[in-house]
Image (cartoon, rainbow, N blue to C red; front, side, top):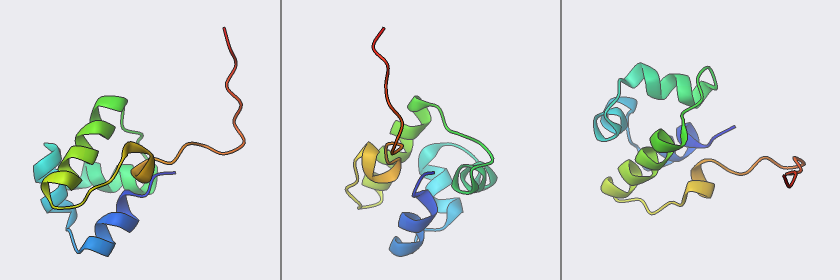
Length: 75
């Protein structure tokens, strides 16, 4: 699960304002926040950049924490 909603709310940023910086609709932001849709890596990076444009400094892992308990297999 991501932390978009938590961080956005803590900063007082509306879905509409974040969406304008991301280049998507406010409903898309809502879908990402509620887990109905999963952003691809490009959109994830755009969301991180959008928070930066809005004055917040977050890393990709701050907004999209790595899943705990998942082991990665070497190929």
